[in-house]
Length: 309
Image (cartoon, rainbow, N blue to C red; front, side, top):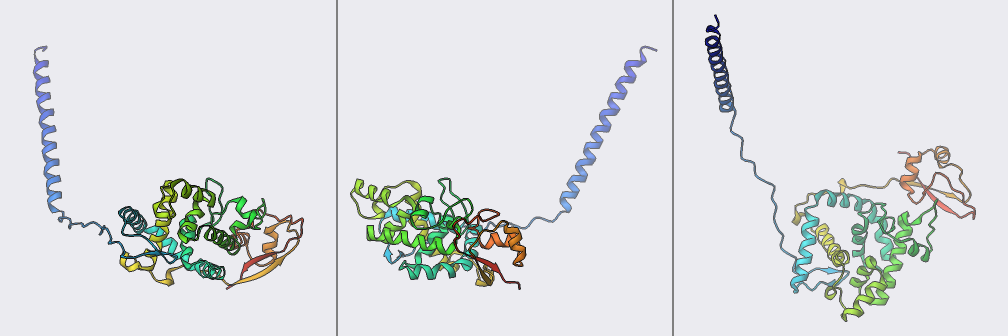
């Protein structure tokens, strides 16, 4: 009886191995058949990614870029490629431009600032109400000290750096001061990024008088090139593969303007009283920075309330 056990064990082992092998062969046949039955995938071609020829001439605020210099060519090429292929960001800037350029451009013109500087607000914030790590705020990225020096109110309840009209006027004042100092719009643009004192110091240290001859930190060194690239791309959209119609852009509603010259205990209650919402109030008046207004000095503010459609 004991001699049969090894024999049975061996037979059982062979049967198990045979069943396992048969199962594997069957699976292989099924898989191969299924694979054969599938249609061959069509060839997938990648998106068209290509470099672009540099423009033969390009100017910033009427001042020609020295495109005969190799480093200038390479710097401009970098910004054209980076901004062309950052399609989502570019499209959003185009859409926001349709919303805000009609507000910004007349203010630039009134203050004698070249229209090209509308692209400066794009490279500063993408026309968003953001705050930089250094504390610059609003679409024009104005520092608190600069805002106060130019008459903007900056408190915990009111921050006019977020007021598009007033902030644009301050940006114009700064740019005019910089242009008067450097007699050059390109350097005025660079100084908007690094400050007039810093720009003057670099010019003196390196004994040059052109932005394109300055060795600068990476951010300021790319600043004017990015402005120029955005201008060129946005003015030649089809050349860079963009299909964009103005009807795709964003727009502002029609507003009623309501004067406030006293305290407001609750902007929520005020919104309801004026047939709007607190969300809409803060959306169209982003310079309101709190849920109430103390207004101890009885200052006068113009509040925009979107008209009901």
